[in-house]
Length: 135
Image (cartoon, rainbow, N blue to C red; front, side):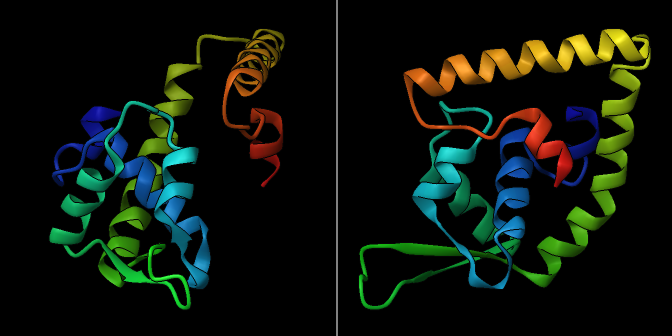
């Protein structure tokens, strides 16, 4: 996947953050909620969002009435780039699991769900893969 997102100047973490922000829709999403949904939990969210904002791929604004909260929105340019990259990332994902038959793929999904459930018990709740694939 890195080979897909790096040519336009993105890291996997930046791609992930932009997908999360885009998924929030027109209402946007608070910075801390973006961090909670990130795949790479070690990512410094403020610096990552600074870079995306410098590239004009996202915008941030202070929430009202709580000005401490910062809401993130994907820009039109950010949306266009995601629309171009998403099919390439999806193809990369499909290629990665292409060697698995249907039963093996189902087993992999169940194991990943179990790992996420274990991680959720230790920290922030995460969406299961099965629920995410239904969206």
